[in-house]
Length: 237
View (tube, rainbow, N blue to C red):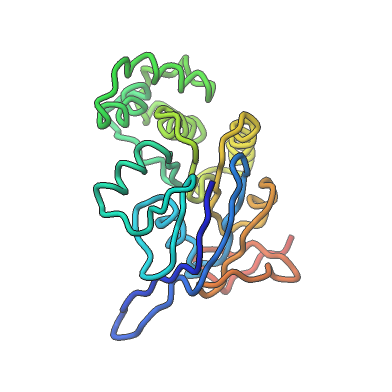
């Protein structure tokens, strides 16, 4: 499903060159649930942006379902993104004045799709929130809001789900419920990438790709959860 070959991405910050990705190659098969893990600044968000067709590498090639998308222009990437990829974010990114149903419908309106309400209702049923379809985000718990965000990602029937710290804004029990939902979706054949700094979250995936300083590396021998807010704070298992 996903093949990356020798990806390089650099940024100029304060006159210095930062190697966000430095010769990264990886393969992810269709139907896998894989964690992209590493501390803050490791390059995992940059990698997710490239895999999600939100950015392009400076060098290297990226193939999605056999199609080389690394050299596409912004409009071509947007078309691939809208057809093949669903995004789930840490802070949900729901529009506050819209109901759950209306939030889930949004990607279908952008794609000028027909029967948006029916498809949105079906997506809410998949995540167990059909009875909350007319509630606005401020009437929902954090876990329910994340389920709405997952339904929104599913509504276009993408082949890949990209989840960026999907449990980061949730308590541990609710986070476990959301990870169980991802595992259920994966069991149905969806390819899922979970971007996280947390070893406990990565343990729910079939395997992990660990990044450090823009390179794929071995995870720490004594595996710690590394806080994105403070890379120096280590919390043991």
